Length: 473
Image (cartoon, rainbow, N blue to C red; front, top):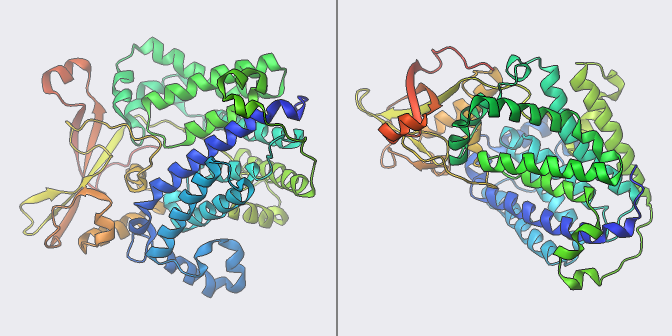
């Protein structure tokens, strides 16, 4: 447990809260323009249907399974209002207006959207934002050593379990240190930086892969050592995060990881970089409260149970299953496993419609690769949830079928809230009579190929979905 006196983290705490408010704002803002098409009443997976089914099946227990604001209404106005509520609370938090109340509102609002989003918000950055936001409620201006330990533990858990998952997967690509030879073009939404990174020499990509594994499997233990080791951990972790941002569109997870690294520093380091008026503020050391002790036991216990379940499948005693279920409902004690396996192929789906079955026109997505000449755009910290989810369809997992079939059905019916998630609907005037999904193998062009064709991607037709070999993994 950290031995630093709490007052040495007063400035760090202020910076952390302001950074968290900006990330919260970005997350709510990103969802505002998508939430209706994803889970609104006429969206791909209407949340109203899920709530109604849960209430009929579980009765009052459904309120604990889905601790959301949307029991009153899950109509479009309610979903968008919660996004606006979150943005407003984030702005007030940024300006230090009723910070504890704003943090509570932000946590409840995002937890509600997390459940409403279903598969579209079932991502590790959503868990991480909720878990970080919950801890921030107990931070205070002069944080107690216990909350500092929990924040250190959260960063450790995020980094170490991500590395451990790569080892446990026994993925041959990670074992051969060749992951970065594939990562840049197979990741869900690459940007132009990834194309340039793909041109780097193989030996450098191999060395960078080794550094990624070192940063996840060894460096996290530096968090609990002396100040010198913590500063080494900051340097390495930040370098990795900035490199990822330069080569990947991973929404706000890297920004949130950078934010958590703040607590590996101290006020002495950051004092020269912050306004003088901040340094003049003093606060009494935070006292340990019953709530802080409770959240500590809950988070550490749930983390242990979930980690055991990840490492040794189905190893958790049945008696504890209920505890894990409740913890997951509030996004407490999560496990993290970023890219435990690496894809070696990119299958891109092109959805087309036709009125006569002979002349076909393609639906264009806003951000995912469509045309080989399309410049891969930089969109951090935005996450277009539909574009991102399209990456999970090529492996043809049964669990992905429901939402994809619903999506295709809504396109077939020209549902406005869903087609608004696209950049071009060729059937805006009249719905198509026929639809099909074509599958292409995509890879980044080499520098020589780009010089000749002016196309960022090289595409090879594979067949019609689902009558192609699934991508693995």
